[in-house]
Image (cartoon, rainbow, N blue to C red; front, side, top):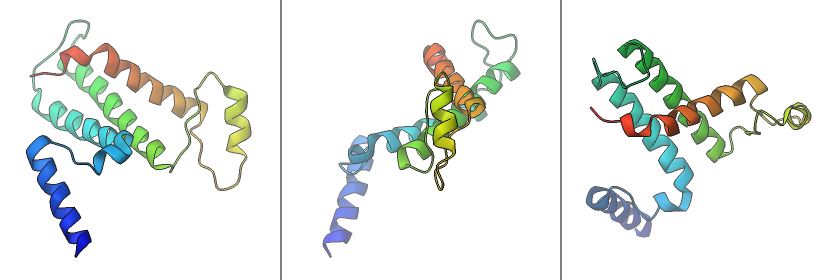
Length: 129
Protein backbone atom coordinates (compact mmCIF):
# COMPACT_ATOMS: atom_id res chain seq x y z
CA UNK A 1 0.00 0.00 0.00
CA UNK A 2 2.83 2.39 0.87
CA UNK A 3 4.38 1.80 -2.54
CA UNK A 4 1.13 2.69 -4.29
CA UNK A 5 0.80 5.87 -2.23
CA UNK A 6 4.40 6.83 -3.04
CA UNK A 7 3.79 6.28 -6.78
CA UNK A 8 0.66 8.46 -6.61
CA UNK A 9 2.55 11.12 -4.65
CA UNK A 10 5.39 11.22 -7.22
CA UNK A 11 2.91 11.30 -10.10
CA UNK A 12 1.11 14.23 -8.48
CA UNK A 13 4.38 16.07 -7.87
CA UNK A 14 5.34 15.65 -11.54
CA UNK A 15 1.96 17.01 -12.62
CA UNK A 16 2.18 19.94 -10.23
CA UNK A 17 5.81 21.03 -10.57
CA UNK A 18 7.33 18.97 -13.42
CA UNK A 19 9.53 16.77 -11.22
CA UNK A 20 9.16 14.59 -8.15
CA UNK A 21 11.15 13.92 -5.01
CA UNK A 22 12.13 10.61 -6.63
CA UNK A 23 13.61 12.40 -9.67
CA UNK A 24 16.06 14.42 -7.59
CA UNK A 25 17.56 11.22 -6.17
CA UNK A 26 19.03 10.56 -9.63
CA UNK A 27 18.93 14.00 -11.19
CA UNK A 28 21.52 13.05 -13.82
CA UNK A 29 19.29 10.28 -15.17
CA UNK A 30 16.16 12.45 -15.00
CA UNK A 31 17.76 15.41 -16.79
CA UNK A 32 19.54 13.28 -19.41
CA UNK A 33 16.27 11.61 -20.38
CA UNK A 34 14.31 14.88 -20.24
CA UNK A 35 16.79 16.75 -22.43
CA UNK A 36 17.13 13.91 -24.97
CA UNK A 37 13.34 13.53 -25.27
CA UNK A 38 12.67 17.26 -25.56
CA UNK A 39 15.49 17.81 -28.08
CA UNK A 40 13.95 15.04 -30.20
CA UNK A 41 10.50 16.69 -30.05
CA UNK A 42 12.04 20.11 -30.71
CA UNK A 43 13.89 18.76 -33.76
CA UNK A 44 10.65 17.42 -35.22
CA UNK A 45 8.86 20.76 -34.72
CA UNK A 46 11.55 23.22 -35.85
CA UNK A 47 10.76 22.87 -39.55
CA UNK A 48 12.53 25.83 -41.12
CA UNK A 49 14.37 27.36 -38.21
CA UNK A 50 18.08 27.89 -38.78
CA UNK A 51 20.10 29.76 -36.12
CA UNK A 52 23.08 31.94 -36.99
CA UNK A 53 26.15 29.94 -37.92
CA UNK A 54 24.19 27.17 -39.63
CA UNK A 55 23.88 27.05 -43.42
CA UNK A 56 20.55 25.26 -43.53
CA UNK A 57 17.77 23.76 -41.39
CA UNK A 58 19.16 20.33 -42.27
CA UNK A 59 22.54 21.23 -40.75
CA UNK A 60 20.75 22.47 -37.61
CA UNK A 61 18.80 19.20 -37.40
CA UNK A 62 22.04 17.20 -37.66
CA UNK A 63 23.37 19.26 -34.75
CA UNK A 64 20.23 18.49 -32.73
CA UNK A 65 20.62 14.77 -33.48
CA UNK A 66 24.19 14.89 -32.10
CA UNK A 67 22.92 16.64 -28.97
CA UNK A 68 20.12 14.11 -28.49
CA UNK A 69 22.48 11.16 -28.98
CA UNK A 70 24.91 12.59 -26.41
CA UNK A 71 22.18 12.86 -23.80
CA UNK A 72 21.07 9.28 -24.53
CA UNK A 73 24.66 8.25 -23.81
CA UNK A 74 24.68 10.47 -20.70
CA UNK A 75 21.66 8.57 -19.39
CA UNK A 76 23.45 5.23 -19.89
CA UNK A 77 26.52 6.60 -18.12
CA UNK A 78 24.35 7.86 -15.24
CA UNK A 79 22.71 4.44 -14.93
CA UNK A 80 26.11 2.75 -14.87
CA UNK A 81 25.50 0.83 -18.11
CA UNK A 82 28.65 2.30 -19.68
CA UNK A 83 31.70 4.18 -18.46
CA UNK A 84 32.77 7.54 -19.83
CA UNK A 85 36.39 8.62 -19.60
CA UNK A 86 37.35 11.94 -21.25
CA UNK A 87 38.73 11.35 -24.75
CA UNK A 88 42.06 13.02 -23.91
CA UNK A 89 42.78 10.24 -21.38
CA UNK A 90 43.56 7.68 -24.09
CA UNK A 91 45.76 5.41 -21.99
CA UNK A 92 43.12 5.18 -19.23
CA UNK A 93 40.46 4.32 -21.86
CA UNK A 94 42.68 1.54 -23.24
CA UNK A 95 43.31 0.09 -19.77
CA UNK A 96 39.67 0.28 -18.63
CA UNK A 97 38.46 -1.24 -21.93
CA UNK A 98 40.35 -4.44 -21.05
CA UNK A 99 38.39 -4.95 -17.82
CA UNK A 100 36.04 -7.87 -18.36
CA UNK A 101 32.35 -7.01 -18.16
CA UNK A 102 32.95 -3.26 -18.27
CA UNK A 103 31.62 -1.30 -21.24
CA UNK A 104 33.79 1.78 -21.76
CA UNK A 105 33.18 4.37 -24.45
CA UNK A 106 35.92 4.16 -27.06
CA UNK A 107 38.01 7.25 -27.81
CA UNK A 108 35.86 7.85 -30.92
CA UNK A 109 32.62 7.42 -28.93
CA UNK A 110 33.90 9.69 -26.15
CA UNK A 111 34.75 12.40 -28.69
CA UNK A 112 31.29 12.10 -30.25
CA UNK A 113 29.71 12.31 -26.79
CA UNK A 114 31.78 15.40 -25.91
CA UNK A 115 30.94 17.02 -29.26
CA UNK A 116 27.19 16.70 -28.59
CA UNK A 117 27.50 18.19 -25.12
CA UNK A 118 29.61 21.06 -26.48
CA UNK A 119 27.01 21.71 -29.19
CA UNK A 120 24.31 21.81 -26.50
CA UNK A 121 26.23 24.44 -24.54
CA UNK A 122 27.12 26.45 -27.64
CA UNK A 123 23.55 26.47 -29.01
CA UNK A 124 21.59 26.54 -25.77
CA UNK A 125 20.02 29.94 -26.53
CA UNK A 126 18.74 28.76 -29.93
CA UNK A 127 16.55 26.03 -28.45
CA UNK A 128 13.25 27.76 -29.15
CA UNK A 129 10.76 27.76 -32.00
